[in-house]
Image 1: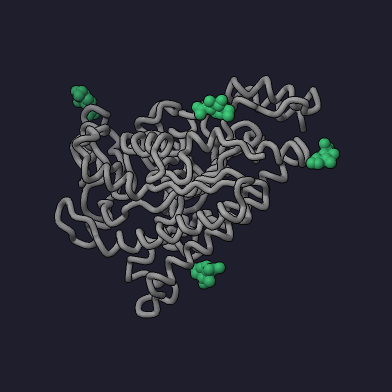
Image 2 (image 1 turned 45 degrees about the vertical axis):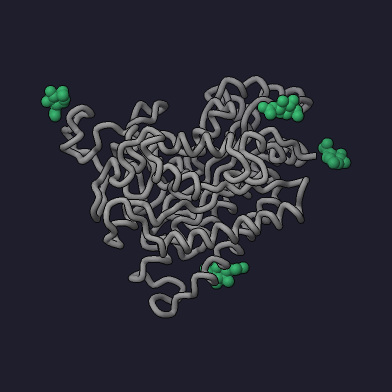
Length: 389
Ligand SMILES: *[C@@H]1O[C@H](CO)[C@@H](O)[C@H](O)[C@H]1NC(C)=O
Ligand SMILES: *[C@@H]1O[C@H](CO)[C@@H](O)[C@H](O)[C@H]1NC(C)=O
Ligand SMILES: *[C@@H]1O[C@H](CO)[C@@H](O)[C@H](O)[C@H]1NC(C)=O
Ligand SMILES: *[C@@H]1O[C@H](CO)[C@@H](O)[C@H](O)[C@H]1NC(C)=O
């Protein structure tokens, strides 16, 4: 078993090969990868790095032009729902990760947990089990945590309980989820929580989201997670999909939808404060205020270097919003023939739901270095440096 790990590790990031060898042969006298950045990523399509490619699902990003700016794949699709890197990709790189945590469902992923973490995220998934059922396949948050439990068993087999505990204590656990729950809730044609008139009230719905998410946070804590980043839901009332289904004029956001989200975010951040009071300082829960960051990008898009904060770069402004590339289109000629925008760095939205890599870069930088209004009680850079006793 150890030999297999070493061989697999050789293909991984260079920074970790040596330390893993030490871990295996010098009976764990040195902590694995003291200088490596390990992260475990949970969430939806905002951070899915390819898990849905292994599912039977309508929520997939496995064809061009998805990934067109993703350098490690030479512009080929990887299952990421954007043109380049996701927020968790960028944050990992900024903190020194030499490669991205692989998708849990990809072959041979388990061994990677020890050096660079694993990505469990799945497009169309939500906090609530029902969320995303129209897309058929997706890994619900509860199941993502089940999968982490499996990875943890593997780690304990290889490294033992104590070393696993030490590694998990240093790793960052990020959860970027909740958007699909809100999207399902606001679409009246979808029978959700009883459907139509039987739909629960906004407040009850927000409470369901927070309490169900809390259950998973506590499960992760029990499994050894200590450093959490919980990303709030962004201003979905402003994404092209919601603008279009609500027939909103150019530049306007759905206030109704954004109010539901702001209510949820407020309850979430209060809940994280309570968890910090109860479980800190041996555990820390950071609230990431993606709502304000993204709103600021949309409102001040010119200041951030964007030309368009309305139309998606790919797939057009009207349903069904399909983002695809015609067979014979090449990158230079595709701007008109496939509906792909000319300059992807000038658009806030990649498709009707997801930000471009350019927008993800700004969001990531704010989360890494932002003040307490953006990331509370500390920012992600400080979290990386935060030592759990
Ligand atoms: C694991 O840690 C506990 C205390 O934290 C210690 O008693 C035990 O001996 C350790 N086990 C190994 C195998 O080092
Ligand atoms: C979780 O959400 C479901 C609805 O999806 C709800 O019925 C249930 O009560 C929630 N659980 C908690 C603990 O809030
Ligand atoms: C590809 O782009 C080149 C340069 O713009 C153009 O001359 C050519 O006709 C394009 N090919 C196709 C198949 O569209
Ligand atoms: C990280 O923490 C160490 C020790 O607490 C400190 O010396 C170092 O300056 C910190 N680095 C950053 C970038 O905050």
